[in-house]
Length: 103
Image 1 (tube, rainbow, N blue to C red):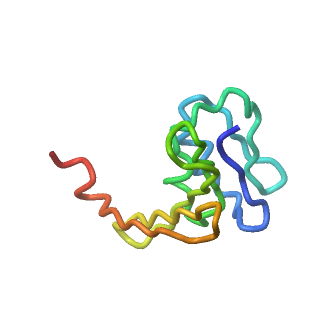
Image 2: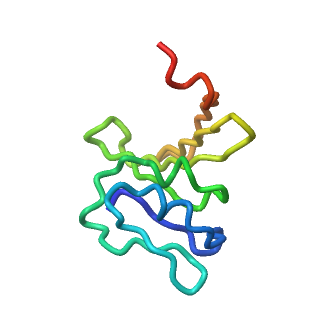
C-alpha cells in the first residue's frame, strides 16, 4: 500500500473515494478507508483531493524517496506539498493548481 489514511484527521467527506480511479477507497462510519490496499498504484489523486490533509503517500526508495512521506494541504488555488524525510527534515513545495498543467 502506498497511502495511509489518518483516521483522526479524516472528515469523512468522500472526496478521496470520488477521485480514486481504481475505486479502492470508501467511506464507512464517517471515515475514509482503503478497501483494496494491494491494488493501489500510487496515483496520489486522493492525496491531492483531501481537504483535511488526512492522506499520506509513502515515497519509496524506488522513486528516490527513501522512506519519505508526503501529504498535501490546500490553500485556495495552491497545493502545498509537505515531504517529510526519514531524517525528519521537511521540504515544502507550493504548486498553483491553475498553472500546474501549463507547458
